[in-house]
Image (cartoon, rainbow, N blue to C red):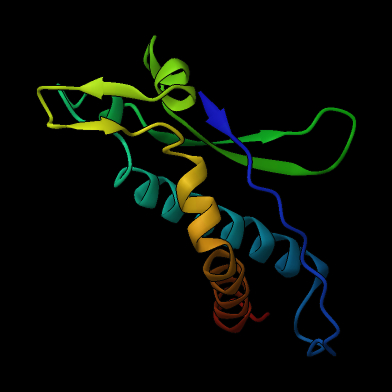
Length: 132
């Protein structure tokens, strides 16, 4: 089960001459992974826990997008019931509540602005630390 959160970055900055194209591309990859890891962490707050298998199965994966130079970071949960649990509300009598569906979508909706700011900050810090 994976969910995509897509946002674009536009900037209008005069880069220091020391910042190369490769540094910028590496910074974008670093910032994207940083946001994906935080999204995974935040989503775990919404994952229902009975045995812990669903929560423990979460991970971030990087993949090239076919036919382009773009790279995608996705958050996955890997159990046989991950997608069903994400899409449907269930009664969890042993947990004492009903719900827990949309555990990937909820943090995206709640933290969209934060993730964009985190991306910009991670990118800036990467470029500052890796000037050539």
